[in-house]
Length: 392
Ligand code: TGC
Ligand code: FAD
Image (cartoon, rainbow, N blue to C red; front, side, top):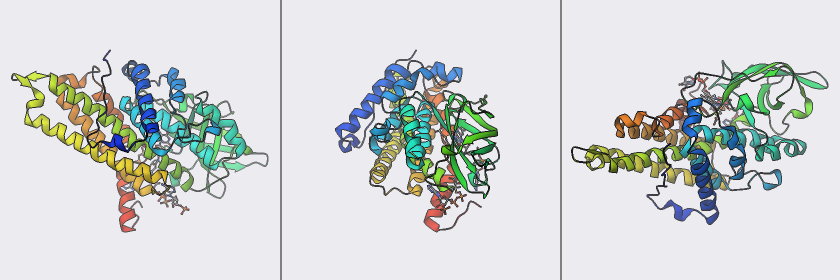
């Protein structure tokens, strides 16, 4: 088992912009990751399962609902603290961050924002404590980038709704107690509905065969005439904008998370470059390796500045969806590029599980795909600056 030697890298003295609370939140998450997750993450990844015994610890560091108010069990933190937690989790593994961001931004957020007070009281404290796990069903087998085309639907049966359809690629689905599902009513309007494990006709088959995000469980959600109580509808908002607003929060967390993955790859490559000797000197003394390291820390620093500013704007309620798209797209691409370069810098050792590089690299293939693909985020920026929608 490799010892986790990670130390943060802060080339532009960004720590000076953080409050004491930000630093405490970050350092607490980092210490927990090093003690509880780093020693077991390679095994979990190889096994292809999320290590469920981590749920309590994730809750304790504020990993479930960081910015949800304390009255509902959340940590009541600001957006920068939320981002820093995501950074520390993904520094270890993207799947670990996924478990946290799905629960926080895609399950707790819509219940808090669009749910009734009864729904908030019923679900949020249990989700915040990690007693319950939730998942978010938007993507369908035939509707990924284009969720507006979804066919999952519900009919008003008088005293309940009848839900039919299927969702695919759903993080946490195989063991979630609660699913926030997006489905169309008889008029074709999209609504969020809370579906609970145990409802008749609701199943969650596990998806196998992933070479990416292996420490996160992924599954389908299948609804076969599921009777859902009417009080499970989220009444606060309908239309595609409702699930997309949840994605804004999760994509923002990913922007920070990707910095974490990049920092870990840079940290490993930098240390290795000083230790590994070839031709009688450390490989870090060769110009080509220095170019790689210099470019890595430059790109990380640019992403840190971009994302910190985005966090300030989120705190002020001024960040637009398009700004979030730019950061998600830029940072994930930056991280996957660094993972690939770092892997090469370790030569043959880079392909082994002695080092986290291949795991980060493979994980980031999911991260660059989910929550809007790299292409979709480019089109969002394109639409924002030109005013022309090039999706259709
Ligand atoms: P469009 O006509 O542009 O918009 C429909 C309505 O939504 C509003 N809107 C937003 N509202 C809030 N936040 C946003 N980010 C919004 N973007 C758009 C918009 O104003 C409009 O409102 P209204 O009132 O006029 O109806 O929609 P479109 O059908 O053209 O699609 C736009 C597009 C392609 C950008 C969107 O569909 C998209 O983002 N597609 C990507 C799908 C995606 O990201 N799926 C993610 C699934 S969840 C997931 O991957 C979780 S992984 C979790 C993990 O493990 O971490
Ligand atoms: P497609 O939409 O079929 O795209 C295929 C290719 O076409 C991509 O390269 C895309 O960029 C390109 N493309 C599509 N439309 C356009 C266009 N208009 N112009 C140009 N190019 C285009 N979803 C959930 O709802 N909940 C989850 O919890 C969840 N977790 C996930 C976990 C993992 C590990 C993965 C891999 C996915 C997860 N997803 C989840 C689904 C994810 O959001 C989708 O995979 C993603 O939105 C892309 O959809 P798709 O896979 O159907 O690809």
